[in-house]
Amino acid sequence: MPEPAKKFPEDFEWGVSTSAYQVEEDIHNDWEQAGIKAGKAIEHRRRFNEDLAHMKHMGLKAYRFSIEWARLEPHKGQWQEQELIACLQRIRQLKAAGITPYLTLWHFTQPVWVAKAGGWQNPQTVEHYLNYVSKVLKVLGPEVDDWLTLNEPEVYAVMAYFKGRWPPFGQSRQQMERALGHLLRAHAQAYQLIHQIDPVARVGLAKSLASLKPLRAWHPGDQLAAWAYPQAFNWSLLAALSGQGPTFPFNWSSIPGLAESLDWLGVNYYARYYISLDGRLMTENGRTATYWDRQNASQDLTELLLHSNTYFQKSKIPVLITENGIHDADDSVRPCYLLEHLQALQQARAQGVNIKGYFHWTLVDDFEWAEAYGPKYGLLDRERHWRSSAYLYQQVIQTGQLPQVLAGCTNQK
Ligand code: BGC
Image 1 (cartoon, rainbow, N blue to C red):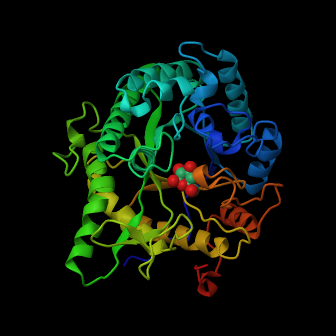
Image 2: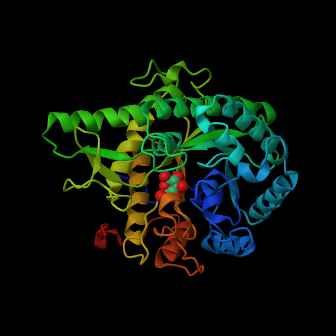
């Protein structure tokens, strides 16, 4: 294996990621309506200057965050332009602090009126989303170069329409497939639209890549499941996005414009799961995995990145790690988790993957969807106290390389 470079490149994008509903106060969207209420979240709006000072002090070069559709268009066609102006101001503040904005246009939430009209089951949601994108681009386009159309569309489709865990709590395979089809249509059309409005924009999306291993390594059924699920939810999508097809089992390559609708690929990676023939995600010892069971396996990130790269041999688009992190209230595992995953990036870079940046999830302990305020993913806690991993990240950014403490890492909770 080639020896990884010791240093990250000078222009590497060191960042953190958030999403609006998970950090901002007083958002009234479909989640709130469905009873999954973030309330004041972590008051990231009121405390923006303070949070920005933390980012600056950490040495961050980039900040990935999302704009909330429900704030901008709380009722159909009634645009709250002042929301865009407020967002513009924060973007200017970030840039003045030397921090590049990466703006996500959709991160799991929509206005109540969209949800009431059928959400992503309804093909008209694609048009409504595009109207919203166009409004945002006209005001923020001149200030933002990097856009994410969607965050983890396949995770959302599974959780909201198949597993019944997120609003609207659907439990049907057909609904899941339909929702995902509409989301991907929305992405493909938004890609074109963003480029029409802002020709210098760079457009990506955040794709979740979970690692799935067969529960019983020797069992053909488990091996089949560990092949089929990533095929369905990871690789068929990357194949369609890179212009290959027809894809199996979902033929996303038939979606107009989806081929070559990426200027860069965002990868969200957290953990490894095990899977057996029946398709359940499990822990290593065969228990059904709960939200809390996320096995750290940084080497799988290298593997997944190398495999992703095979789809983009022709276009050679860059990759950004748009999320990576761990819930760890006492910060006993996060320092090693961080270093080992950065080392996994070095390994992938040494083998030819063009990785442009890394965004840790997340800056401050936030609202974690159905798990509410339970999981603690922050480099900082809610009171904005720095955990030791925050200092470590700061050191990595300052020096552009990993410190020599990896040998002592155990990396498991
Ligand atoms: C989502 C984030 C979430 C994180 C940790 C990701 O799948 O994009 O919104 O907070 O997982 O649970």
